[in-house]
Length: 430
Image (cartoon, rainbow, N blue to C red; front, side, top):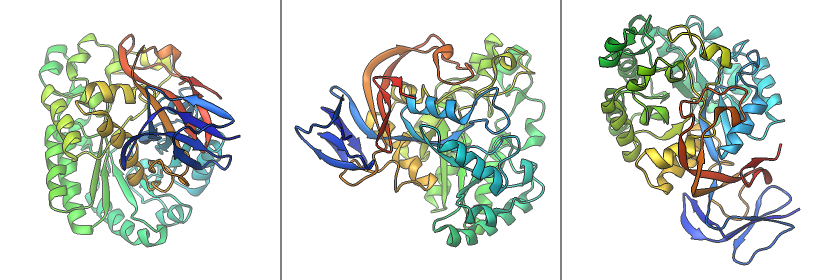
């Protein structure tokens, strides 16, 4: 059946206009105009129609860690948050470091409400010793490699992987992206929050900002040497942002993301000793939060990512030093970005949709302008609706949100994935 989104204001990379959107049975946009009607009509009045969001950094836990999340539940949460594509991190069990696990993730993803884009580890088991079979993985369609959760410590191995990746781009048809979690383990070891005033007050061992910044500096130098495309994950410090800004000004092929929690929350939140505020990299200072916001505003940071990291409730109830690091992010990202980034709505949509889609290599089907013939991967957001965050009410199998009980402005009303309405009036259809 044909579907029409009626009365909405379209915002995409081409600008803004108030028009109806008709979606055909083939999953493509059939028409954009006025007075359109279909077999099914969804109200978009007072709302904004946007290309669907793309998350560059989601932990979906499957295979192996299904107690915390599955691809199906993670995707359902993504759909409720306006996402039509999720880039799945490889720290699964077994690690996503071979074609067999990649295909397993893809197979599970085909039964979910989002397109699941598997990444693969740069090194076997993410142990930083032996390079993964990147050639085989690229031939299987993998375009992003990351040891996320750990920074690759060996600069010689990192250089080798960078050099190898530049040649693989010809086989992939686009540059291979190496996504780096920047952290020098020798400096961060034994730390559970940001090292600074609050860690001293609380008596919690800290991780210095320099643990991130030294690897950012190193990898920018290696990009200059090799020409590889490097994507910096979850930047969290002011100096990291400044170095990426300088690398971009020099014309180096680098991109970067920031999470909502790193431009909203500070290390002061850890004063409660509540492990829900334990995250990796840790929450930083007011100065760092301001720098992240400035980086988003001036284009230094290319995308807002969630680093959606579900954990089974009993694990997050452990003492601060023993609890795992991570927060939920998929269902709250749009609202938080709209209310706390300091950016206007079109800028927020760009950072959530078409800019991350380009980095992920899916700009042919996600983040696409809303025009006839384009794939119908869309979300409809109400920028004025208010709602209260409840971890228990989220689609995730976990509930570790640091925004419990907070009232947010802006919510997803409908999400369309490949022409199918998977969220209608804020409710998941499957």
